[in-house]
Length: 486
Image (cartoon, rainbow, N blue to C red; front, side, top):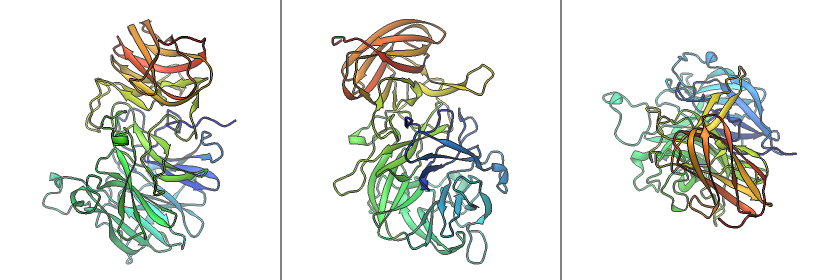
C-alpha cells in the first residue's frame, strides 16, 4: 500500500529547504540546505543530507545520512551557512555536488560514485589558469548537463535597490544579472563565461522581466528541447521561470510557477500562509511536472520545510502557477478517513499575522500564529508538532480531501478557556458544515465537531473564535451520522 505523500513531503521534524529534485535510477532525490527547528541559528546551519523516495511510492522517504559535513569544508566558520546545493550526473557516470557558502565567493565541487553520497571535495570552479573564479559570488549554483555532454553552471545573487552601504567605495561581490558558464569535462574548469543570463531587479527595464527580476536560486532544466531557468524573483516568495533556445543565450520571461503564500494566484493579493524566501526546481515524476519549493515555520524565515505541487499546463503547453496544497506529491486528494497532524495545513491566516514576509532580523512567534515543534518531553528523541498561538479569527485550511461517507472531526487542542470553532468547505468563508464550542483546561484534550455530509473533493477550513494562545496538534476523521445543514 502506498504511503501518503503530503506537504511537507519529508517528516515534520526535518527541515531541508532549497530543494533541488533530481531523478536517478528510478528514485527521486532531494538536495537542499539544512535548517534547524526554531531557526535560532539562522539559515542553513546543518550538514548536507540526502533524502530519496522511489517513484512508485513518493511518500516512502529514506534518509541517507550526512552527504557532506560542515567540518569537511575549508575555511568554514561556525556562523557560516552551507547554502543551496545542486547535484548532477556527469558524463563519466559519477555524481557532482556544487555549492557556495554565505561567507565565501567560490563554488565548491564534490564527487561521489552514488547519488546519495557521501561526497568528497575535489576543488572549486576555476579559471583556465587554475585560479579560483572569484570576480562575483557564485551563489546558489544550478548545473545542467546537456544531451551532448556539455556542462553549464548558473549562479547569482542580485540585490534590488541601492547598493548596500557596506559595499560603497569597493567592488560589489554581486553581479547585476545572474551568470552562466560552460565548464570543461572535468566539471570544474571554466571554458566560457561569465555570460549574463537573467536581469536582476535593478536592470529589468525593457526586458520583459519587470517586477520579476532575478534574485537568487538558479535552477536549469532542458524540457522539450528548450532551456528552462527556474529562479527566485525579486518578490522573493515566488519562483518564476524563463525560456531560451540555448543555455547561454537570452531568456524570455514566462511567468510564475509557485508562491509560498499563493500570492498572484488568480489575482490573489492576500497571503494564505506566513511567507518568506523561496527556492526550488522542476522534476518530471510519473508523467507529470512538479515544482519544488519551501514553506516557513516557527514565526521567522530560517526554519523551512520542502514542499511540492503538480503544475497546471497553459494553452501553449508550458506551465502556469501552481496552487499550494496539503496534497503535494500525493497525486490526488487525501482520504477523509484518518488522523492528520495540524501542521500539514496549507492555509494559516489571522488578523494578528502581518502581511509582510518573514525575515531573520525578527521573530514573530510571540505575536502570531505559527507552525511549531517542541520536544515530547518524555526522554525520547520524539517531537510534538502543532500550530501555536492561535487567536480569535485564525483560519487553518487544508486542500484537498476526498469524502465518500458522513464523518465528524475530532480535534486535539491545548489551551485555557472556551474555544469556538466553525468548519467551512471549499473557501475560508465558504458554507459552514459544522460548529462546536468547548472549555479547555490547559492540557491536550479532544473536541468533536459534527459535520454536514460531504461527497467528492473539498477543501476544509477551520475558523477559531473565543481563543487566545491556543495550540492545535491534530484532527481525525471519524465515522459520523447523517446531519442536516447548519
